[in-house]
Every structure is written in structure tokens, then in C-alpha cells.
Length: 360
Image (cartoon, rainbow, N blue to C red; front, side, top):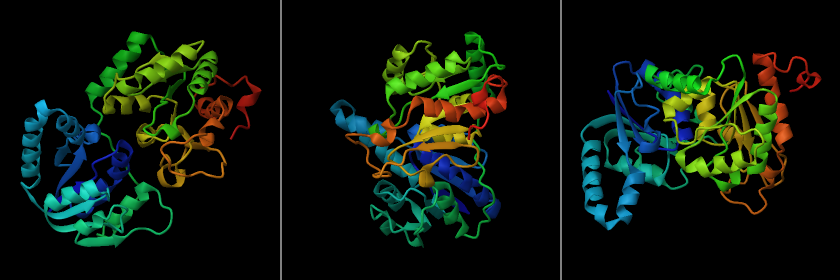
């Protein structure tokens, strides 16, 4: 039995799909399981004990190569090699968890006996499948939706399990960083991750700075995380702060970041892939939601807090917005207040404060 999972992007989507590995492996214990994924999220599933082969689709690099005539020939050669590799094996079962045109085209290139996924899809990608399952007509979190697809194969889906293959090298890297900074495990640690792909999901820089100052003032260790592209955003926030936190933009790979998140008391973050990464490693998340719906893509599991303002137009799912009221109406004091109970639970830092009690 050869199975191909098709979930190429994004980071959050790949994390949401991780729980299907356990029921698939339990139902098909001898199966050879492959996963087709884009380069940006591949780090999360490399070395995963339930995956036999990872096929990396370097879409971003190819798009850059197609725009540069000097790299055009190499890009075309790489694409031809990739397609050949994709067709190396014939699969008994191809599972489309993405439901987009790009994955439909990739699936059409695969040699698969059964090609299964939800229908209908927005981009009509289900035309590339030969087995379709009706898409749920009611709001369902992405994790539960993907698990529902594998239950139609007869798999038994218990409590979803997220596993990220964090190795000792990743733990050592984070440990060395903590040691070099003189950070204490006895003091609470809050990670602020201000970045998101959509402009409409971004919270104001001034409020991130205000939140950081409130936390640092109360003795909390604050680390900012983000990609190298997020470095200017985090620098701007730090410049606004009286007590700047620690800037680690571009410092971590995904598995190091996962371990760093696991060491934090809480992660404060807008709706983004890193919100799902923090939730997957079991760290409480304070999630700032604007244009999207937490019922569909909120932090999965118990113990998280979602802050979403009752603005009439949300959720609109728009990537840009003129007023962006759903995010600007969130105050730094509100986020700080929602964060305190987690800190109270893990430390006596606020034990002498009256406002530590009764916060929900």
C-alpha cells in the first residue's frame, strides 16, 4: 500500500494536517506514506517517524527563477526532474488535503489508482480526483475537517495528536541561546510574534510595544520572533519600547522555533502559521483575530484565548482593509489582562496583585 498526502502549504495548513498521520498509520500499518509539501514548511515533517518519504515542491524558488532569464534553463531542468521524481512511484491512494488548482495539477501528474478529496472546491480542483467526499456544509475547524476525510477511509480518529520531530540539536541550539543571554527558567517567558501574511491581520506596532513594556515592567522575559523578512517590523516595535525585548527575527529554523515556543509560558500572536505551531507544541496561545474566523482556523485545543472584537463586518476574510477596526479596536491593556492568568498559573509573579484574581 502506497499513500501520498498532498498538503503543500502553508505552515498552518501543514500543521493542521499532521494529526491524520496517526489514524492512517494505524489503519494501514504496512503502508509506505509520502507527503508532498512546499519548501517553506518541509522542515516540519522531515524526519517524522510516520512518514517514509518527503517530496519537496520548490515553488517559491522556481517562481524567482522564471523571472530571471539567467536561471530559466536551470529552473526548467529542475521542474522536469521534479515531475519525473513525482511519477517514480505509483500510488494506491492519493489524498488531497489542499483543494487548490495548483495541487490538482500536481495530482494529475501523479500515477495514482485512487485520488480522493473533498468536493466541491473553490478552484474546481476536484476535477482531478476520481473519488470525492462532500465538503462539510457547517463550520468545522481545519483539523477536524482533515480528520473527517480519513474517517471516510475507515480510519478511527481519536484525540488529534500533533508530533513535530524536534531533535537534540534543536534543543541544544535554543539552550545555548538562553545561556548566552543569561535567561532564567525561574522567570516567566512570553513570546511575542507580531507578523502575519495578511496586512489585515496585523496589530499596530505601537500596541505591540506597549504590551511588551507592560510585560517587561512586571518582570517577564519577552522574546520577539519572526522570519528574516519580519526583522524591520520587530525593529520598529523595539524602537518604540522603553524596555526592549529580545529580537530573534530570522534566528530560528522551524523546529528550533517549535522548541522555543514549548519553553514559553504563553505566545501572543495574530492568526498565523506560528499561532498553530505554538498550539501544536502545547503552549497556551493568546491569539488576536481580525478578518478571519477562529471557529475555522483558531488555535486548536483547550487552554487558549482568542481575542476578537464584535465588529459587524468580521469575519470578512479580506487581506487588506482601510479601517482594519477589527484589529485596531484591540487594546494592549486587554491583551495584557488576558495574558496574566497564564502567568499566574505558572509563577507567583503576580501573587501579590489584586488584579491577578478573577481574570477570565
